[in-house]
Length: 397
Image (tube, rainbow, N blue to C red; front, side, top):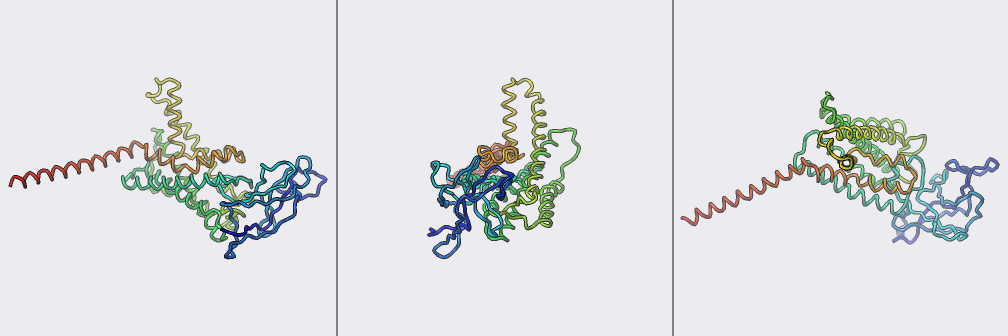
């Protein structure tokens, strides 16, 4: 266990609504003033190694409570390594403290899955969010790995399962890479951000191809034939082009001050968010089209409205992990703590939902499983019969 804790510089900052007559500096569009002394603290282990990650034991620092002006509130802030900026993510004010008491800053620098969809710098770091992210991604990685093994074992090699397998592989790889998003080495951090960008875009591209596949199958008049080389070229080529152009144009922006991910500078984050938004919108339209076709089937026309609603909801539940629709909460409800939890839980568990809907409860997979089981039983019966025949002959000698 470390004997000391480390933060470069930390202070309590008072933030208030901009006032034209005040010369105070600005942060994220709001004027600020320092409400405490600036502390410069180094935290090292017994071996002399500096520490910067406190996910297991957050730092707590108490500052004398500064005077609070009208419409003003306190935030805990720390300074960047080059001293040019002040940041608040990973540091929060202890809201349980009584009014007028010291201001306690709690800093941990955790990274939750919600960081992927941030449109601007916000303080979404929370121990529970980080824990949910790690648990959800671990479950998803295991489920996606099992899904790929099942597809390989049963030789599920038609176009539908090839699309599922590529989606599972890209999702699983992106989840594994996410565990290294707080890498401190600059070159390693850049590599993590680039790989995460590529495999996440690949996952969304395969979600788009899932939607395209479903649309083609639901449209009998659609004449375009799916060809595997074209499918693979789109699935892996599109994200490769986007990431390649981004690297050439702005390689230095593949890093943030607290995580290995695309920066907010000049909207660079949109090199990820724009394709994601386009794909989610397209897949939402595909889902609407599928619901219309599904409800128009003869088997559903004689059902009651309640039965139709259940059938439609079942279809949505089956298809949503393939189409990635819960990711839309990252756009619509950014900053809302309830939907942030919703986003982290459902999207970190996407691999589990893919495993359940496209492996465990898939009719074709279960049919393959039953066929394999029947062959094993028949082989066992044949072996038993052979042994019995041999035994009879031997006994009759």
